[in-house]
Image 1 (tube, helix red, strand yellow):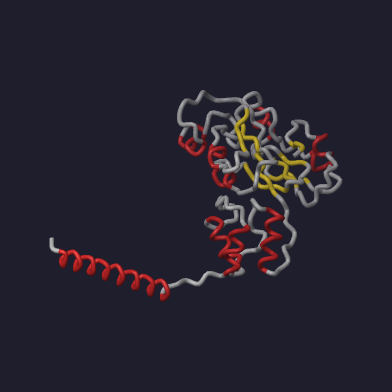
Image 2: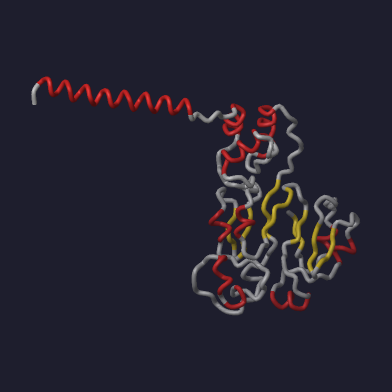
Length: 265
């Protein structure tokens, strides 16, 4: 190829490159999306776990919602009160009170305490147990299945299966709610970190049935309700329920519970 041909080819390639560069530059200016500086600041303040515990699609989704005033500044369950105060400063508002919560498994149905109808050999995923007889091998149809679907989805390694039942490490738990969502038995709930006592049972069966299936289940005897001086305990559908806002932490319910279904949190 002649020198003139090389120069011509180089000029053409350079011209095309220059045109494309100018076109992309102009397009970037024309179609630029303005981002609220506060949104970026809020995003930087968030922990970046992208766990979805706030109800939004990741930290960027929450940051956008906070910047628009669609979500409270303390909406991040992982960051808690410290992060809420930082974001409140960015948004120029009051942080408000933040109640730290943790996941709690409403079951003590360990292998030693529960009766099994049969031995199960199959996929170890609680969500799959709905397709097997009685919803799982344990006689109690309300208890923990013990195959760890909650363990799998927890991004903080805060929940583990111990002797056939899920147990939460309240210090590691960030209350993202993923375990609550995945549990097919709906026996995991978020309760205040400072809660003194909680009912570790979800069974709504009558007392005689519960006693046959599990030695640690609530039998609905109402002794906890009758002996609670704060009126914080109710019994509904044969199951005790504690109103944490009313609970004074006196421990009378624990002392009177004959099955020890109420535990210190």
